[in-house]
Length: 210
Image (cartoon, rainbow, N blue to C red; front, top):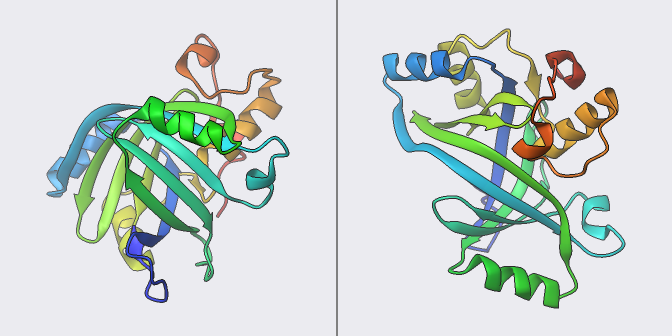
């Protein structure tokens, strides 16, 4: 996450990233090790809950209110960035660590928010220069997120020889919506249990967004 200079909040950032469809994450991990990337976090299971009010107001406004549990518990707020970067997913993000997942869930419910979708993944995180690279195993396929200043993201893509990989600025839930429509799926949560036995061909994501 990159600090946004015109924000006064100490924990507010601009998130600049892309996603790449990368079926062979083992091979990519080996490439990262060869080029000297530093592993920040070993493969870790993530459980995410996104919240909204009864009218779907947050989603309609492009706002994400998310509670995540992995090796810690974090509450995240995202909204559209004031200064989007063309070709990249660009969002203002505020995140803080909390002590108790169930207590934070109860607080959000008490404020009138309810879970709108649950999504899972396994994530391994590397650092290379100014870029953070996340290897993501999701129920609908494997992706790589590269986050950082645009020039660092592009350099990382070249170094890792991912120039030809399908590239996305959409969120995982937006990609999930495409998969649901293409495959006629009738469930709302992006979980490994829901996708068990369901093959997801790469073309359902429309081949990238370059």
